Amino acid sequence: MNPVFAFLVSASLSVIPMQQAVGQVAGDWVFTRGNESMTGVSPQELRFPLELAWEFKLQDKPKGQAEMLVSSAVVKAGKVYAGCKDGQFYAIDLKTGQKVWETTAKGAFDGAASFAGDLVVAGCQDGFVYAWNAETGQEAWKFETEAEIHAAANTWTDPQTGVQKILIGSYDYKVYCLDAKTGKSDWAAETGYYINGGAAVGEGVVVFGGCDSVLHVHDVTNGEEKRQIEVGAYIGNNVAIADGVVYVSHYGNRVSAYSLNDGAKIWEYGEREFEFYAGPAIWEKGVYVGGRDKRFHAIDRVTGEQLWEYRCRDRIDSSAVICAGKAAVFGCDDGYVYALDLKDGKELWSYEIGAAVKTSPAVAGDYVLVGADDGVLYAFKNAAAPAAP
Image (cartoon, rainbow, N blue to C red; front, side, top):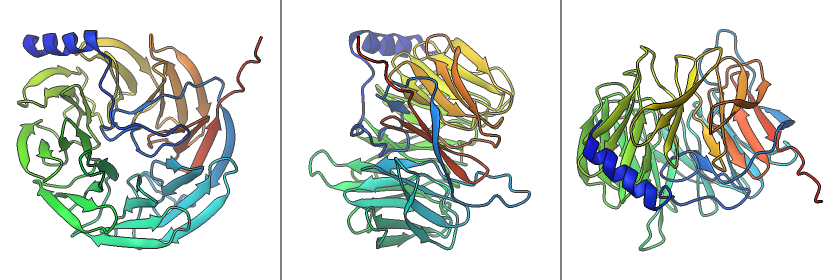
């Protein structure tokens, strides 16, 4: 651990809470990781036990299918949006679980969608980024990359102009910044290999990693490269940005924190020889992430030391969401969805789905939504609020 950076981060946290990125409207989940910085937080307090409200089958599970079948969901204005391996993309009523509209492409939808104005935008394995009218499903535009797309879309709004941009990576080794209204490319940043995870925005930069084992830091307004940070291992998911620090979990069996200012490593966590695929969630002084060592880890943001861990029955590829600073919610390959107490890691609630849950939860008002490898999207609802005295 770099002691100078530890002191600076500790000082900033002691004066102000973790810097928050653009957030959600109450009842929505418009960013797949809670905000454009992808810190995986929700202001919604959960009341347990959560109850299963509805199930929606996006596709039948083919025999022998081992990969994730459905994308993580996003939610806006009472509708849930998610795609699947069969090439369907759906809008579903949040309260009833009934289909609102459906569209089909010539490839799988792996990455979560994002929103811009009245559009919902998602990348597809057919190499296109699609934008549809969120109400009707009518296609507004599509943008062609040179390879398949697995990454989640992210939306950045220019604070100077109010113009919205879509940021998304492709297997053509590039991350694109697209005009949200027209789908035209503003800039493209080239990397050394495939891009799987979403691109996080914060501190005026966009940061993303991929199969070239490098964190790429670019000016979000014009795409100018600021620096490259050598991680040394494949990065399968999004990073998270908070208070001038970028947090990354990777296939080098570690979780690491780097300074955005100069790329210096602040700390590195991990001792077992198991990869991290899930993206980290950040809340106040903690970093929270599941690993393929079958454990969910809570890490001190300042020191990189372990706060606590919780053992599951199988690997954890689902990126957790921190709800109201009290509970971490995530899925696991053991077929369960878990909620853990953020203070000590004790189990608050779990539900057995019976199929691996690799998606990141969406938390929209009283609803928590997860997709599982049985091709089904599950919606859980908060327990009833206690009666007023």
